[in-house]
Image (tube, rainbow over all chains, first blue to last red):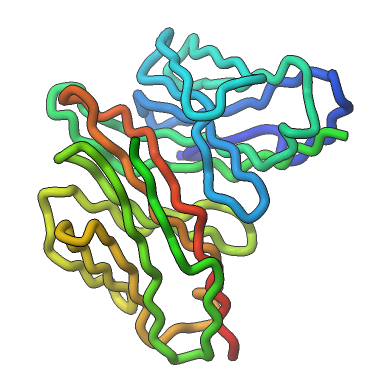
Length: 117
Length: 118
């Protein structure tokens, strides 16, 4: 298993450009998440998904969009890049059985370091 | 709203010292999960432990141990006989459970930078 993969690893964008951060997992996890980590800070949730076709906002969703058409993929779209979106972006996935409500640990991808200038 | 506080921004120790990383949390829910993650200089996030709010037993894994106290809303992490390889940022995180189904959204503390000197 590759686990959670993210592409690209690094990217520099100009203000106003758009891009999509790719995330894929091969563990058949139902839950997927996008977090951002600003320098010296903890991670903050941008968006999450509890299954294909179902997404919802996290703590800091402004300036981002997501979609989840398959269980495996959860891309994050930046439409008009701003310097405030300079950050490291982490995708994560986890499994939660819908019947029990239990929660297992989140597996994180290696991150994408994005700079907007 | 849930909140995680790691009051220690940076800790510096000499190899073989014991070190405790503090984590205090706030939640309105009676069912929740607590986690610790390690972020080494390479940047990835490494899962260390998950603890259910109903399980207050302390846990030991090698040189790592965790002390969970619901009465003080704390979930502290101790490294015994620290090593240079333990140098990393350590994050405590909390996930509440909503309406009987956990969505697993994690709230992270700001992290503690641990530096272990040889």
